[in-house]
Length: 86
Image (cartoon, rainbow, N blue to C red; front, side, top):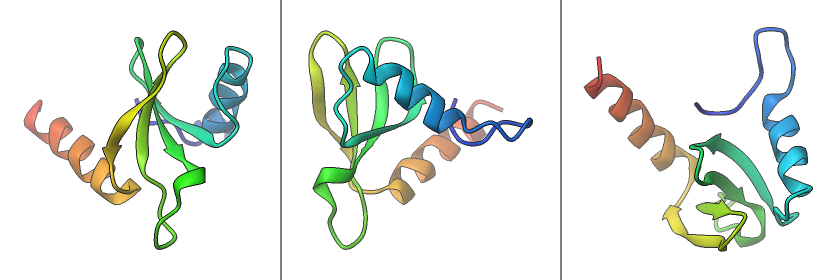
């Protein structure tokens, strides 16, 4: 599930990012989706044309490879996956 703001207006994206910082998530990463074995994150240290790439991160191996060039391409892919699974 893509993290954002909950129905109760809680900032889930902030809460999960803060929580994972206790387990070693670097300060430049902001969690946007938890897929159990790893999380997708905005990498704010790698800005390019005012866009953050999306990388994966897990506690045991750290930052993985760049998965998407920006949030738009990530969302496009995720929404297409959702439509295909209808």
